[in-house]
Image 1: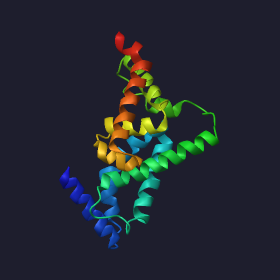
Image 2 (image 1 turned 90 degrees about the vertical axis):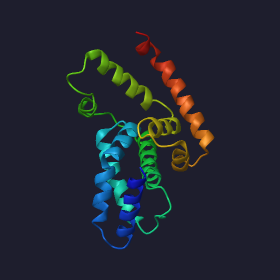
Image 3 (image 1 turned 180 degrees about the horizontal axis):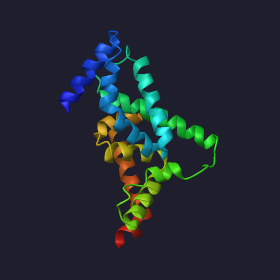
Length: 184
């Protein structure tokens, strides 16, 4: 992990020095994780791709403001989380109906999985999507991105204790909603 942090800091230093191709290294290293995080946050594949691109645009635009002693992953996921929050707020104010279920079908999993496991995956995905935004964000960063609570606190702008409470509360809500899937 320390090696990746050093690579990211080095790439950001080169980017700040005018070597624009350093952004390609950063994108290569972080693109899939960022898209996955944003997908889990927004529940929409197209939005997650668009928001990830916007996050990298903001990385480039903020290249001179990155602090070399900062943890790059916290900084990057902070940018992505803000974009995701703004997107979700915009969606709540401008609701739309999907034209088809193609977006959902694309993320339904491997065709070889059983109907029961697909149903379980869909239930878990839906339950996570229905969590309050602050709980959902903390849970995703912890469970899927495996970020330490201190980094999540930095991204979310709260204390480590608040992150721990959010994750605990999210797990409890998920447990209550999904108990029927895990009893059998």
